Image (cartoon, rainbow, N blue to C red; front, side, top):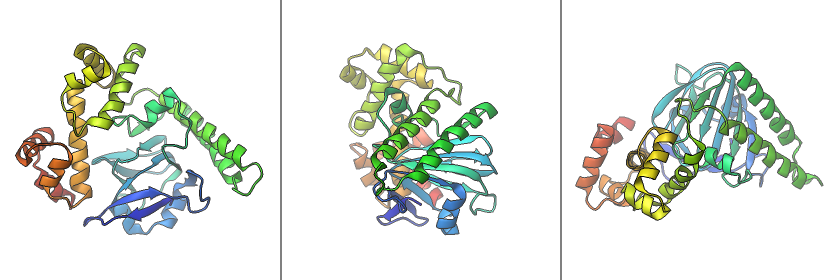
Length: 303
């Protein structure tokens, strides 16, 4: 697998995964079958939690399993399209016995800087609240299968010593962009509809939220920084997600708290400080209100 372990994990460990392509060094994309992934990794890897710093797409053609993304279990079956973003925590698809799921699936791993930067693809790759999975209709599944088949073919043709290597690399970037553009026009799996007029305020809010959620906690501060009224910002957030800006801010902070509690052995007070809380007691109250669990109880549950 195009991953390399870094740092000291917890028990049970959460593994930081940095991108590395073992068969085509220097190429920030890897395309492989899920069966190849299972052959590379020991069985106990499927019981551990991973936090990659790259994108992880999987299109399932046959078989069944369960994948955990940011502490939520999600079913995998024919037609499931998974997208794990950098920084999200995941447990690889497993069967009912806890071993590797028996999936016929295509896996695409790529770094954030590999695909071309387009507004539509950025909505897919940069949205911290973007869907982690879709259950595709048969026609959509067939379209994605064909698009990925092109990617598989060109990936197999790539060698860095080839005189056409730069052309093939650019073709791989464009083919990946085509897959991401197809994802951008998929219906939201939760049925949310985003009006075009709301896209820009929400897109800017997403970007600013990722930059500032540890230091900026009030919705009106984001609205002022972005040059919108609070009403406009809330309307855009509701259209895009069904939630207000403040709810999204709190959800992002709570999610990062969960990741830190599960992924590191930092004391709760240190987690509180890293997330910008003035006092650990304030963090405890926030986390308990947001998750219905104390930080200590949540951490215990992950062990």
